[in-house]
Length: 144
Image (cartoon, rainbow, N blue to C red):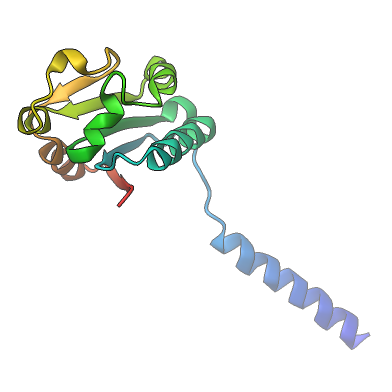
């Protein structure tokens, strides 16, 4: 009899412990995520698209996502080099913002006309990332 009571109490307290560690996601919470992309690796780009898909599937309109491409990552937004233009267009239609760094364009002698139409521009990519962090956005760096 004591073994059954002990077992029942153990299970009861274990469930309290597990439930205390399980995060509760409030559907009304607004999430803001800035993602820094500085890699021209197409596998990194594919991973980025999967991350965006997972965030949007889980949180829908309660997540705001901005992707900032600079350095070698600018190729993600270059017509003829990107492997993700269809997905970029799809996610743009879902509210995801894609931005290219004008400093990178100047440094690499890339004209704005070669950037896919789904993308916008910021003067300084890393500066945009810093500003978003200062405004409380969550920060993710993809790639290396």
